[in-house]
Image 1: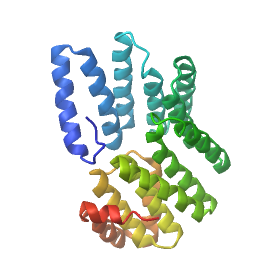
Image 2: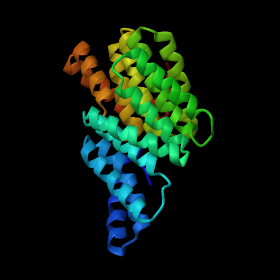
Image 3: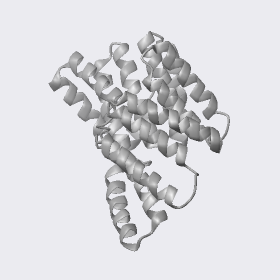
Image 4: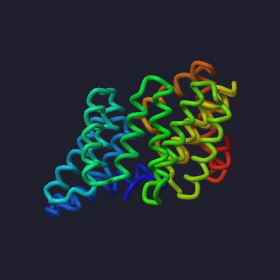
Length: 267
């Protein structure tokens, strides 16, 4: 139960109902699963504080069950939500805690995900790229962690764009998009579309950038209202086009058929 196939509204309704049922039944495992799954939907709604609270509830439910599985990943996810909320110090604290826990449990997923988060915290492009490359290398070591690669590749592409390395950004995006299309990971594909829009803007194609931002919404089934990188890209595209032209191009992307939307994602 997630928004992984691009229907965030239906996922939210189903999970909210499931959580209420589990609470009524006193199903601790079900409460853990539903709390964990509601986190990204709250984040998508632009409420990272509520998302972090959902992950904290999931963590408490898991610890009450007496297991350490997934604990480092949950702590790391809390760090990601604090980053989205603008609490960089809090994010660093949770990332550090997650890495310490991951060393004890031997979780490569947590290490890769937290290292990726540390890249987001880095203010220097070279430091960010180093963290992302480290995270990608960890993610690519095992099939169990390969699913993290598209998000990391998209982040690497964003760094390359800001460094002026557009060819490198294009290569990273091509890899990210191919992987997400194969796995039908719509949230990661939408994130890649956001960075592809940033690339289009860097190549002086602001109308295409706006259409790609709309295409991301069409693919994911919702606007990611909590992503600070997306907010920055949207503001830059709006500034170049003006509100009316932006809304027109954006709407074009949201109205594409799913197959046409996927076809637009060519770096």
